[in-house]
Every structure is written in structure tokens, then in C-alpha cells.
Length: 171
Image 1 (cartoon, rainbow, N blue to C red):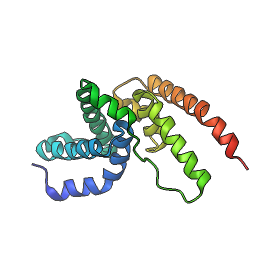
Image 2: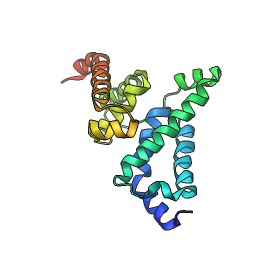
Image 3: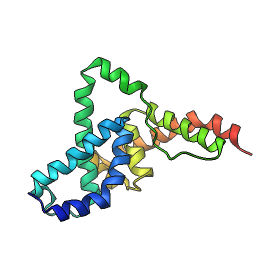
């Protein structure tokens, strides 16, 4: 078993970022909490996974990604749950006082939810985690050029979807 203090420090340092990432993937607060718990339970049971890890955040993001994908795959076999996930809208952003900003944040949440999972994952890692395409490629186990392409396609879709609203809200 991993030392509780080490796990607690790892949790304190990385849980908020992992939560945001998992929420973006699963679109469900309950699934996000389950996956986050699963990440740290796995580390508690298999502390050797952390041996020789140079980038703890990157490692945890990859582990969280794999667990989230497994969760999503299990759920996709259940049609009823799949429909519920498609209709669910989890709040990704803090509430905004400005009505125009609140409208834009809701539109961005909707636009993100419409992206294919592969693009949404890369966009999140790039924009919210500040990861390079090389790091994203490692986390998701794919070539860096594929990560860059998914990011570009995701941004193109977000721009196309949000441009009319942005133009409308411009002063």
C-alpha cells in the first residue's frame, strides 16, 4: 500500500485538475467522482505504478483518461444510460455575474459537449491543462500529429459554433 501522506499530497495537488478533466470527459458529476476515486484507489493498491514517474500530473491524467474511457465504454452498452448522458449538461464553468458572459459560458459548455470525445479530450488537455501535443500524445497513447489534428478540428468546430454568439455579444 502507498503511504497515506504521499497519496494525500498527490490528491491535494492534482485532484481539482483531474476532476475538471474527468467532468469534461464523462459529462456527469457522479461518474466524475467515481472515476476520481478509482484513480486514487488504484494508486493505493498499486503504489509501484508511481515508481519512476517523472510527470505526476501527466501520469494521473493518463490514468484518469483510461479509467474514464473504460467507464464510458461500459455505459455505452446500456442504451438508456447513453441517452441520459447525451442529455445531461454538467456545469464546467463557475457562474458569471454578467448575463452576456453567463450566456457565452453556457454556449461554450454546449459546444464542448457536442465535440466528439477524442477532440473534447485533446481540447481540454491543451486549454485547461496547458499540455503540449507531445504530452497529450503520451497521456492518450497516440501520435503527436494526431493530437494536434484533433485539437485543430475541435477548435474549428468550437469557432464555427460560437462565432455567431460572439459576434452578437461584441460591444
